[in-house]
Amino acid sequence: MTTTQSTDRKGMTRRRMLGGALAVGAAAVPLATVAGPAWAVPAAPAPTPTRLTLPGPTGPYPVGTAELHLVDRSRPDAIAGGGHFRELMATVWYPARDVGRHPVAPWMPAGALKAFLADVGFATLADQAPFTSAHVGAPVLRSGRRLPVLVYSHGARSHQGDHTVMVQELASHGYAVVTIAHQYDTYTEFPDGRVAVPSDDRQAPTLPGDFAADLRFVLDCVEQLAAGCNPDVDRRRLPAGLLGSLDPDRIGAFGWSKGGTATACAALADERIRAGLSLDAPMQMNPPLAGDLHRPFMMMSAHFTRATDPAAAAFWSHLRGWRLDIQAQGAVHISYGDNEALFAQVAKLFGWSGEQLQDVIGTLDPDQAMRIQQAYPLAFFDEHLRHRRRPLLDGPSPAFPAVTFLP
Image 1 (cartoon, rainbow, N blue to C red):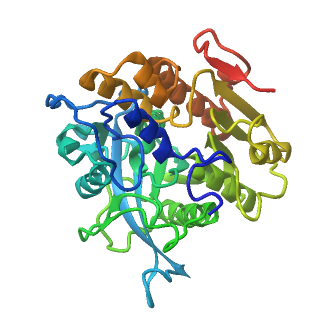
Image 2 (tube, one colour):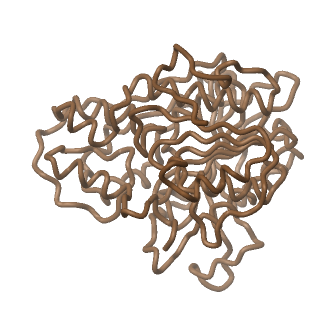
């Protein structure tokens, strides 16, 4: 299939990227990389019980989180069979208050994490998975104005937690962020205990257009929340203050890889998306992305640059509003996510050489990579949803020497 995996014409997939790391003897812990069937993992020293960590958000607000179980009754699910409709899990992240009584959320639900690690051959490492900085069910911080909303779409064979650092950073600065688990192309867990894993592409093809349809359906659910209605099909209680707290007139969207392509597709089709951001998206679809986009759009490029990916170049040529394309030198396809933080710790845990680590995450310094993904998406959405001018978007910054502005 054309774009169901993060792949270019040379066949570079996330699975192959990680496989290359394993081939050079790296006993990788692929907690932040998606793969298919398990590999024959080389012997490695027994890990210590050190728990991996993620950088905390820098914003002034603590973060809360709540799950939503959603069903799109406008889309029958032929894979699940008659009478079934497209089913999704989503998570809302938001600025919170009184978080002390509420536990922090895990990086992935336990069942999904177990399936994920089993698929990549590291089931014994589940106890070392990181926690987030978000507190489950904490009440929403209400400040008198509704919260601008961002919707996030993950990559192929990935999961909602893949960009937790970015998501919780945005929430800590006053955004409500809704992350989507795209059924049949993700690891997730439903309230009744069912664990979903990525399906074989031949049995359950999931295209960027399907992701885009999910995204637009979630926008409908955002409007329900804004109107004071609970879209959760199980009618589970939502955190205090969430209903009526979202601003349906200030909505942005962002996504990584296949999710970035879906973000572009949805933005072209749906004017509710006032600003869009893609994180190294190939922009390859069948049929191709078409039409002019007159709203702001930003690209953070790494592997899929306009110089190497004609589809990305073609999409760029149709951006008629504010546009920006930046690239962090030394970044690879997985560099704009939690991978940078997690693999840097894994390298120490298993004694990787610097070369082995760079084979996975590139030569971009991990600490700078994390600061880049906290700063630039926030600046973009602040400027275009909150109308707060951010000089960071005007040109190269001495604070981020690796970031170049592509003409």
